Amino acid sequence: MKFNNVAFNKPFISGKELYYIADSVMKEQISGNGYYTKLCESRLAKITHANKILMTNSCTSALEMSCLLLDLKPGDEVILPSFTFVSTANAVVLRGATPVFCDIRGDTLNLDEEKLQELISNKTKAIIPVHYAGQSCEMHSIIELAKRYGLSVIEDAAQSVGAYHHGQHAGTLGDLGCFSFHETKNIMCGEGGALAINNPDLIERAEIIREKGTNREAFFRQETNRYTWVDIGSSYLPSELQMAFLFAQLENLDQITAKRKAAVEYYYIHLRPLVEKKLITIPKTLEHNDVNYHLFAIICRNKDERDSLLSYLRNRAITSVFHYIPLHSSPAGERYGDTKGNKLSVTEHVSDCILRIPVYFDISTEEQSYIVHSIYEFFQR
Figure 1 (tube, rainbow, N blue to C red):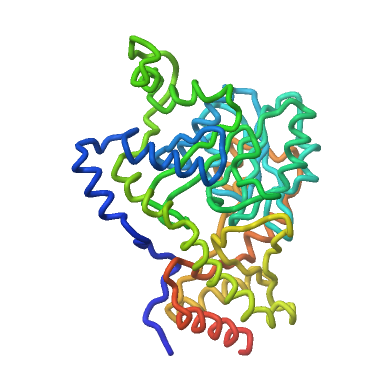
Figure 2: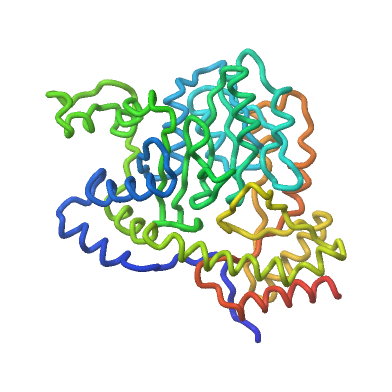
């Protein structure tokens, strides 16, 4: 069977999204921090067991809030992987601090915890591990190192709703955790995010920062008799329309994860012969990590082969994509960041050779079979 178009990702309706949006309009509040925002915060707190959840309008906003909460300033340094989305580094740079780029592991594509210590200086303020593809970094090692040097830990868990590390939900092990609900994520509302606040000392100020630097939240709880500007902040609240859509998805998290698991396992099973022949490799899932099946990626043997496979699939109407261009070699990364003179060879190899193939909620077995067959055809040419 041939398809006219196999999309890389498709937004989807899992249940009562449209009903809840209509209901939010009928409640006559569609700005922010209303009925559905509170429902999402409560449901996400129940899922993650985070100390406190604050919904945001994006994961980018959650990362920016985190850097504000840590009072990052010019001269400070924050260690993070170069293999990540630009928002991770941007949040640091916006505070005038310097992102220090670390290499990743070749097996999991996560921050290499064994290369962290050599990057720590007297200017280091925090570490931002990024849980790639819903698989957690080695957080116990990272947190132990952070405690030894008095550093804060912000987890970039953008891809990790429904993922666990040693039985604990990703994003709840460090001081702060940041989630995304962009339409490319497992659970989505177009745009959207959340901040998990695991350090209780940061909760009160986080509420103020999210409300444009005002004590509006405390005022509505009648904890103060004045609603005024008390700190720096910005407009980080999502609208009720976003949260109404998201709540329906959160209600169906288990169903969504199960369908994605089936899709990802199909690829694992049917592409295994190519792995055994060493034509491709597939990132490893560590035994103590429960992933959420956010994406499926293969690593080709070299860049030319990856690019050729990418073109071959596109010619067969299959939308496959590479992933991050290393931040340390980007124009802004060279201007604002630092590698401490280290070569990030694994990051560069993975960026050159990675190829992601379609995984989404309602992808059909027929579509997956067509994709797998096309990959085999490429290697049999």
